[in-house]
Length: 481
Image 1 (spheres, rainbow, N blue to C red):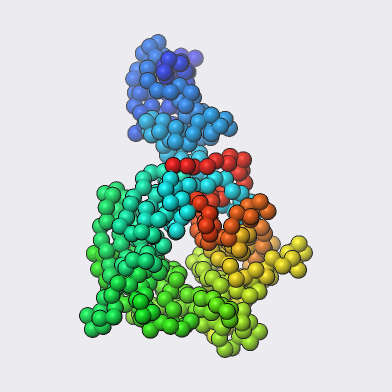
Image 2 (cartoon, rainbow, N blue to C red):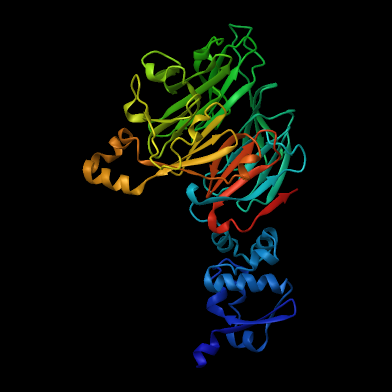
């Protein structure tokens, strides 16, 4: 009994008394304020409560968190996320709060719209970039960039020299690379220092026409930034830029432009393994869609594979050119959505050839003949966490693995499943992500995953939608700044 009492401690927080155990408050970690307070003699602490001049109600929530590693159900009903974060920072238990508030693993088939992020000025986002690790997001709106942390709390807004940012990529923890269709160059802005730290222009001393080229797309690798530039006379290329010096290392894929197969890449993706750069471009007009997908080796600048659509060798799909493309690096697969049929095609990156596409089929009767797949023109596609998200005009759907089919192929193919899965074509099942009321908000412009969230922007609509798995869907909030 004496040992139990020796572990007990009394705290006076804002005039309200709490009784707990030293082991509970030490659960905050050795660097937390509460752990430091627990070093006082247990007898003295019990007889003479320690006074902490903070909000007792929020402290009660944090104490419950230390006891159970979970937040009480009422926590977010009575306190804002920012209030909880501020107090957790004071006590040094932010990591515990972050873990408790992190959404569950993101599954598109069980996702719901939980919030929308609205920057204060120029509320219609022109682009955004999400952090895969923590689920934070940076939103470009007009010539400004607003950053939102892991808790989707506004951290800062940085005004750039650009009137309209149309491309943005987070290339370091505090640095964004940005470009605009209406102004030349690639520019690097540091949130911590609140300033521009560098710029890159595409120039050629031997060709005076190469100047004032705007940026169309940006991606990065651990050591390089890649950006596609296009001059007024349509000549274009991708520049490889050293991250440590912000100096141009090489030109990749320089071409004259003016045709579907020589357009500036509007989308760039870096594949760490096998170390190739994927670029794609799509255009549409009176005669339909046209475009290409191209893979470069940045070290040599050579094209290692490409396809141009519409093209020869695909008579059954001629006229059904791609509308958008994305890469699933985890599955070593390339996905496209067709512009006419709306079909989703997949190709194994380790076995690309003249016509590597297999088209996903859905045997769910509710989807067959529903016309859902026939809306291909205004489509975007994004791969995240081994799921394929497709925005068809204003509707959002997900293709995800069918576990039973995977197990069957694993048993049949053994160790070769990883290479042969794509030939099956039917290992993905399709589901709606959004509800009817969600789909009436506008045409989907961009989809990007970050942490355990999916971020969606819509054409002409203010704010960025935040989607999480269903157990968080009851808490609908609007973050206005």
